[in-house]
Length: 399
Ligand SMILES: [Zn+2]
Image: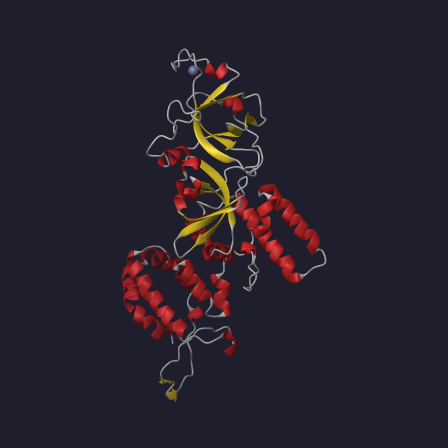
């Protein structure tokens, strides 16, 4: 009976009942506002106790799902044993929704395993949207979402064995190859191995769990790759990453770098990841849209690679003044020149890496085998992006 369910949560309802007269709003609006963490915990504890005793839906003849057996009691003067059972799904809709809305991702996952009705409820996208946003939004971008959909499509095809699967797979590879270098594509999904787990679906819960479990490698960029290797300081490189819930860090797999095979870095912290800010694949020249708009003092990222065999990384710098200009804004004509000076002040004065010049009219890749090749430029307009680079600034100037 509902009575036995309510008893452990009695203080919660007591407070509720005492408070309601003070609330001119509808009863449920008042309830929702009054739900304190303490009472939620108490209520959930009671619910979980109920679920421990839950029976499968197949054992029931109606939609009543989770239950407790009531003690013997008298109804209409007769002693009736086990005549009625309480269902948690008999709770008011809003109450149950509020409870589910307070559960953690792990709690929702556990609750979904209780019975088929709760499974349907607990898989609802609206319950998972906030969890998805809270945990993954800072590292998940459009590229990862697109890959997830391709991943689902490829799994569905391989599962169904449809006649057109070959052409579909070719299409998937074709699309992916525009984003990722073909040589390491085949290991993107499930680490190249087949899984025995059930197929994921297109729910946000499934998306969340695939990320959380580390089964899904997704595209992201990693600041200061390879544990801040001096050769990559103040750069950001494309990688396929997967989450490691044991360490709350990521594994990053970088595309082949010249003669170096694919490099895998473990223990990548959250604050060293970002979603790729542009769609440009790591081996392609980014078409800049800011070249005519660059002014001294602007913060930029520029594509740079050691040789044409390498993927590009994005390197942080600022637009500087030309040689004759002393930087006085009243006499500065640098923005009218055909040359733009880029400064990389993380390098010591005199370092050959500290300054570079580009022709903003020239969109082609520039540079040479000695100094490397630079490509497209992004002008940073977000204070967060600029401050991020400042946080990563090396303690000592680089040679
Ligand atoms: Zn100037």
